[in-house]
Length: 569
Image (cartoon, rainbow, N blue to C red; front, side, top):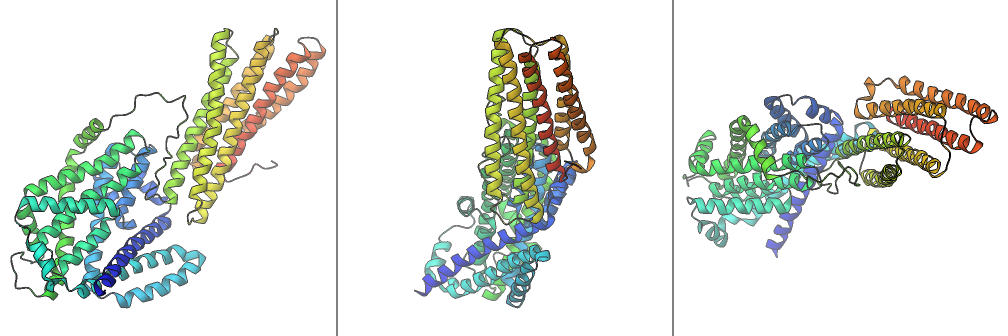
């Protein structure tokens, strides 16, 4: 029964470890906010700065999976090229070695006296609104260290070093055989893929090695397997993404697999060299249990660091070749889905997603939505100059399809934002989500206005009368103003709002309003002067008024994005 209790204690400690890592990583990302995005987007000008950036970000958020998924998302959003992403992922592999050193510290030092004050201080900060993320971070790191303390005590309680069955199982393996090393490498890979946490598997490896029952060579083989298994997270996250994002995730796998292959070829000399760095001899069986418990966690952390640093400095020169390889493995879809409803940036998979990443992806999707809406308006303008009935019907059907797509895009983006809002969000992120909800609603209204204009033109096409040359001229002038407003809106959505002159959009809207008022007065005079019929005047003013409504919706999008409201509006 005592063995079952200890086993449950180990399982619970691992769960606490994974949760602590998650809380700590998310708290650090919330504290950094959008700075992480700007760092990744701007500090990757060459392979070396990209590598250093990946290392810095991973050390900051204490999760290579978070950095890799973030990088894949940025590739999906078009913020990073594939080559830049590969260099960042290489740096992330170096940054994650800090976690192994933290764990080795947890197994070597009694951190109980630090953990409980951290819990107490953390809960105080969590309830103080201003410093709640620091409190979350303290809670996360306290959980992490507390789980290591529990694991260490559970390992001692198991007394594996005096269990003949366990010792007999591990001694039955020939530790000097490459076949055995590969078997344990595959076990490490499989367990990490299932658990989805290399930190948890590293903790188990350190626990087994520190008791002396697991030979260091087999422990290092498990660590190598963890390096491959941890790539599963990014590859799962990239399943619903575009080809470039899937290639970035695949590059992470290729990078680690190549590293494992060359280390396997030099396995025993490489491991012995690392052991010599920390003054440990694998063939020295005279060490006491206490000495093993102190040194072996350091050996594993040192190997993890040496492996990732060496692998990065070897393969960083071959980024173009890795890029060509992953492009050959993952072919892009050749189907032109311009006319089909498909979200480009928002995928169904939300593994490791943080609110900051989710908001970024939603923003990119809104940009795509706005560009599609402007293309739709371009089709409406084209509709006014087509006289051939077959061509007119074909283009009108395309506009109908675009209107249906805009309805679906609004619903799907709103659903996604609603799911994101269920998370624990900062006030800044909540405000962004509220603004985006307003943006998509107004964009869908612009799509409705485009369709209403197309239907009015279709009614005119079905009748016997046509607009006069002067009416066409006025309509095209109004279309030009409306298109200018849409261009300004897209410029804002695609760029940074602090570089945008919002007055330009407001001025265009005033021009549209004034021009609509002028044409309304002129229309009454023209109908009274019998220049065209009342029916044609009505259709004509329906188009002009719909353009004015469309301009209002555009200004609403601009206001939502800027977080402002027009004076007097």
